[in-house]
Length: 281
Image 1: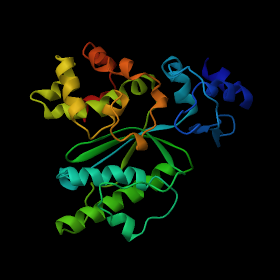
Image 2 (image 1 turned 60 degrees about the horizontal axis):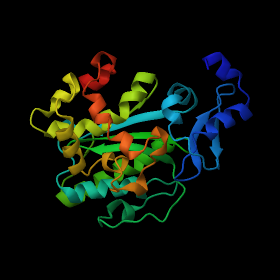
Image 3 (image 1 turned 180 degrees about the vertical axis):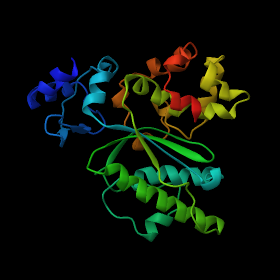
């Protein structure tokens, strides 16, 4: 289906197409754009179906209908912003706690417990993938409400900075400028973005950064390393529950067994096809 045919689709035809992209976790899909009118349309309450591979077959259509963003930020002056697992727990739980339209006060900003359970269900974004590194983070997000990403990121960054400064008795900015929000706007970007987010921790392996340029020479070793690194959504996608409550996995629509093959397939990737920004970061 080409762009002209897609623009000519009626609301009912688009709804029928998106039926096969239903999200199991909530019965809802992210906010999509009606390209004819330019306004957002939340397609809600799709019934269960078993076509979980539909995304890989209709990736191009998905990119035309929805807005998927790669969101990232790093520490000011490239300083480390996660110093231990307590810091990482605090940030991860912020992804759950602040994913709501409800305002956050100083109490919720400074909460430090590792057993936070969100009382809120009205999420402002779907989190399709994430990864924490020592001095930066990656998120793969789509909005469920207007300006949902801005709502989450504002509370997430301010909340974590307040927690960090209080814990380490410092003051001033923690993050390096405005959070980057890059729209996934090509088929190549869509095909590689989740792997890119998940493979970042390979940088911590000896000669691990070679994955950015030359593929993965030892996929089994790389997979074992990622399965031990719990600060990303890789384990959840591979069928090992880690932080499943914050994650929406259905967009990429693959079983854990099939997902585990990504790292093997990536070892033979033609890197001329990988988006340039992945190789230069």
